[in-house]
Image 1 (tube, rainbow, N blue to C red):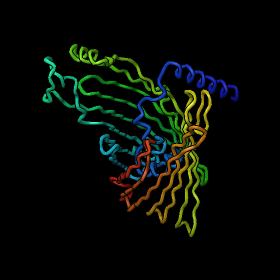
Image 2: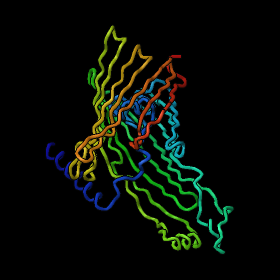
Image 3: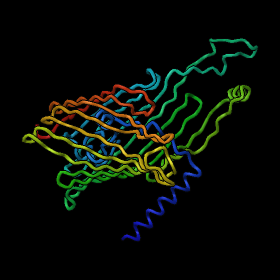
Length: 354
């Protein structure tokens, strides 16, 4: 067994090195922002503890923790003074006590971008009537499934089938496909989680439909006409461990979670960096009172530069009343040094027992 593990680990590292030489490290970046104010307030440290409909994004195995037959979550956020908009909708459906299906839809886009290709007309005059607008939009559709096994108490398994659609106005777009595999394990008050994200790599196939006049204008203005190609999102491993501590007759709970994102594509500006493996640790703490009011803190986006280490603190609160939850986070979830106020809601439909 040990030899098999070593062999598999060596194979993963070798594949990572091969892809690192031929593929970009950063693609489908909009999927790294995160969803749900609870997770964002905890520095994205929720791989082990997430147990609601947002698990379709964070750890699909956690979908087994949904409380209602149907659970729905929504979030809207904006960046760069409203230029970029991030929208999220997710729903889950509990088939039975051992299986749950989830659907997650994410849209990240910039709308109303001026198209100035024909600002200067053929006579050399500026004609503002020739300015049109277009959008650059990225969509992600995650089809999730989670399951438990009566013979394996404490263990939950899950996975995602991922479909990516990118659109650049009428000029071009891409389709992408990938897979995630995940697990959660509970041992007494301990929670452990692992997610193999893009385990087969996610491949985005780009194509463009520029007219000849578009190409001529681009070349005449010293720009490059884009060509179709393949973009690859490389595999990564997300790990988490959490424990719940209860006080005052279990009215007060404190749950710290330590997470780590492991990449296999060479050195990154993370606190643990090597070739080909880099590790990005993050930490979150959630304190709850009577399962109704929550205070959350997180530390994430740890970066090293010029011998110094930088990080972004996150903060949030949550309120849960029966089957409805409202969460808030003050977070820099884009690692751009710009903090956002993020709200998300979650509610159960047709809750069992009613």
